[in-house]
Image (cartoon, rainbow, N blue to C red; front, side, top):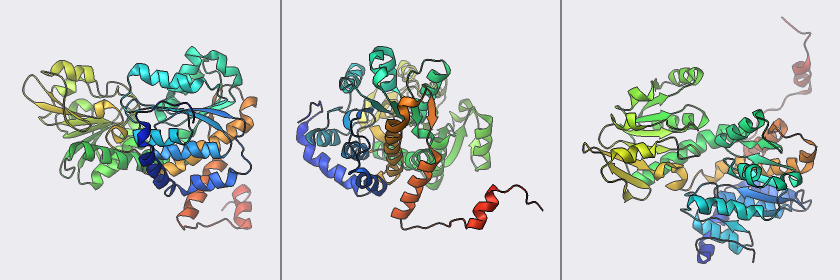
Length: 419
């Protein structure tokens, strides 16, 4: 039995059932597990992972092991760990350090435990693992081949490090792969956020005004799902191109200051702090509800909310806190301002994480093979790997697409033909 720390190892049997269920809905990753199980391209690699401990993540972890890697794992959010899954992994020999409702100190202790293995690769979601290595354990850097980053917020952080000359080992931006952000961010976030909202609140979405903060890939997915559920959708943005796109997609577009009095439900996905602040709480209608789909709990300014309330938070349902304002209005915060799809529900469906985690596996193999020859920088996911992943997914769905003829391939490279 490996070293681990989880909530309750007695939950392992239930966790194993969840992991096995996810496997059945992740055919691309299972195909890659079978493909590489004999050649073991990650043999000799030690991976420190920091990513939400869900049933889908467990399938990735066990796939990394099956193709040769030694793996140690922590969660990347204090509230996103599924304790049953964590126990299932621990019982199967994975050094996992994660449980639901971690304190900040416990959260970083878990990351530190994974680093005691002396990793050669890192797999991160949000860049807290990458930051911890740079800030506290620079002695590990010479042994690192490279790493990967799963989410938009993390990619923004590591790009900022690279621009500042602070990044000391190569990182692949898996988030920017087309098979990640076009599917995970759009369809996964769109569906799972409303799964979390409805589990936590049991409200009817139809007929309500839903305000979406940010019209990136995640925001687009949420806006589309809200409209599909019958909501009147308002989008707020700081980017003029995205604001224009939201309008052309049929949504109302306005600043948050103007949207605040209108909204029934507010959902943020910007990666920026203070999207919703005290000035907005002051004018929100009685019963207004707000949640966040961005990586960190800074988009909704909870201290401002607490300062305006009579007695602070009152837990009224799972992952739903009521704040009674001093003027008698009641406002509701979903999931403590953290990722509502993971704090209140189970995160993205397995079928969409199949694509993202196939990308993570391929990124680890690519870094193991190429990382030592690379300078510290943020690298794009190889286009050919993206296409291979998408083709494999199509095949598992029983779908076929056209192929260019030799004449078409030649035409695509020609430049002499005109009108």
